[in-house]
Length: 322
Image (tube, rainbow, N blue to C red; front, side):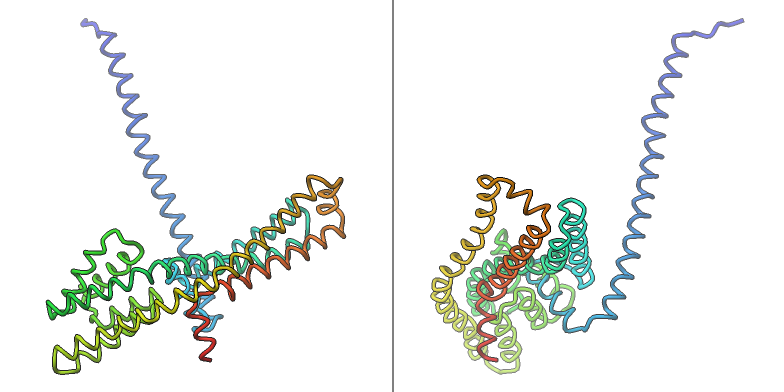
């Protein structure tokens, strides 16, 4: 009777076991993980759809459009329901944190209200900084696209060529790439420029889009070139005026933030040098109320600075016109 070689048999059994463990089981594990992830995504998407339907049904279109435009100008592709979910989530986080961790119900209520408005404050700051960058980049873009149009006499080609020149210049390059993509899929150049002006919240790009529409109803190329050039001329005049106003308003904004920053310093001084100060503020009802009132005042001041003093200059111009 032939004998079975033990050594090769053991190697074969170990090899098949390792293969099964490393590849077959891991494959099943990967399939399981993938299906679990798909299931989670389906549940998440289902919840988001239900939340979106509820929000769209309860909130006016004008308010939804305002928040979505705010997010769009900040570079966030959020719907109103996404924005609302973030607001509610942060509000609930502050509520739970101050009730169960800090143990101050008064501050929990105040910070829950503030937490609901916090995303709008942060997105507003991001928007302001992003639009300031865009404003510096839009002038050279307008000048280049108009000059290139004078040579090519084809605005679409001028737009594509100028976009390539701005490669790496963010955030304008991303926005221009979206505009070129819209034109490529059949959206008219005037509509694509309109969409660009909405995303960048720049009235002079909107003016360029309007002048482009008018220019193509006129007969001569000379008139078209002069009309498009007017948008850039008006942009330059506005830029010079704004640079002067920004210098005037920068000092009050800086002083306001310094005053706000002094409040936590006073609190830190009390913790370090006054006996039982922290215990009184955190555990005594009078200290808790005092801390809540001070926090509320500080938060109102921060919102006022962001909304009024530090608001983009275009908002001040709109208020004056109204």
